[in-house]
Image (tube, rainbow, N blue to C red; front, side, top):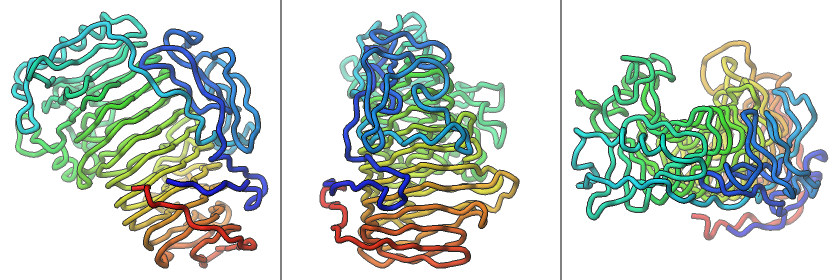
Length: 523
């Protein structure tokens, strides 16, 4: 989509500077698993990769000489540093301790990942008919896992077609440090439909509220550096097919258990650093598609998630308690949050760039509902949402709330979105002592092709929503669904609405003439 020139947000909130159209230095060098991972540059300049970059230690990603960049309003960034925590960025506590850190530039993506050379090729033995594998009796788990276990770091296990055979069926796979799983074009890795093939705790996978750690994912990365899943092939979780031994699908069971079903995810990354997910198509997850937890440095690039909008609890990509991440150039259509940033740390989930993505069906670009560990320094830019339930959303409640700060949204197009702007501290009726606190939130250049319902609802007057809005244009007049304890700074670009309510202030700057964001080619 065409972007108008970006003004400094000092015109809006003085202290904030938006650099979403400025270019930044690159991220990383090296040819580790699936290429090097360069997290958001400028503030970090982090390098990963098993080879070519400085080796990563267990505490974090290594630094690469000569890496530099810029972030914010042209502030120069230094070379990346090794060690734990947010590499190269100032440590930020849930309450902002340690000093403000500007969100990284929208273009601080680092280089596009590359597919590493194969250490082994596993040939398919099953065909695909009507979207289903020809044989489920003999799993391919052992053959794939054996290839992974014998693969050298910096290499990939390639799953390839063999004539008309292009299907694999597998239970849980465990990636090792530096090893990438490469799913070749035309190949589908199908998930087994038997919960026993994913048991992390005997007898509990597939149970109701038996603990999320009771199931392994289809592809697991546990405390491993520089692993990846790449290729132009497909991972199919088969959530809409009957679970082995029964007539109900994973999604049927999820609805019956009111969201508490314990079911396999497609990709689960826990700990480690330098994870890459590149080009692959994911579909029909029994539960979340991609969960990235407690990981320092990750890159999700050019993936497709294509799952029915009715599939429950099938989040697209969920970074949780992770830092220095990129999600870019991806198409995500699913039955729950397209992306959900979860502040379930420590550490604070921070230094994330979400850029050049397109969302179809789903619940939108979300932060929460877990925010108790803190969310900070996130930039979302060049995003189109077409038919999502929500647009830009921060959601939490007093059972799981915390500080969300320094979040910037820019250059966003929406069409057929019911709730374009949702900032809600009463996401559910659950209560507790973890109070939501959203401040230093900025949205600029947002064009909604229609109207919709808006929510600006903070927890109370001592934890107000502090939100700057500039050039926020609706083609039809929106309605205010909820507004309380919110301090809104409007302008200087046009804003199509005013908000009023209990302890709501709406301060409009002197308006300057500016066209709405051009969304002609956004969808």
